Image 1 (cartoon, rainbow, N blue to C red):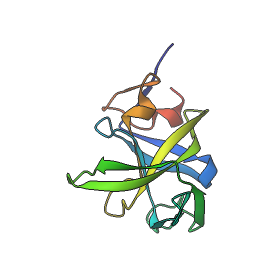
Image 2 (cartoon, helix red, strand yellow):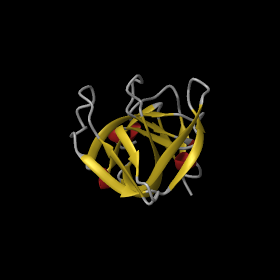
Image 3 (cartoon, helix red, strand yellow):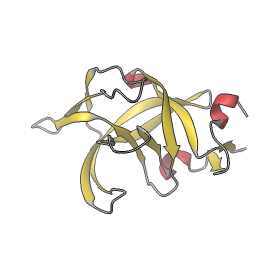
Length: 141
């Protein structure tokens, strides 16, 4: 199977969340995908997670409050080295003109430049990363 080449930053759409053309950082140091959300609340029975997609900086964000089935809660080491418990959801993303099922962890990334990280598990067996390039998925290379 031919692997497509992606750059260090790409645009990705999360169809199930109605988020289109999100700026994402391709991060081979991150295990999984992560998405910036506000007001993340796990239901008492741990069956669902609610969150708000509100961010003035990222124009793709529409301010909607969403509730999704909770996929799982996992321990994640954040960029500052702290261990966090993060809820994750399973969604359909559109990337490089194709749709994929993907697991995304929800976290507060308000202090980060990119609202989304694309991690190793999503990239594995599908894509190669060329850190000297950007937005190859948009150019259709």
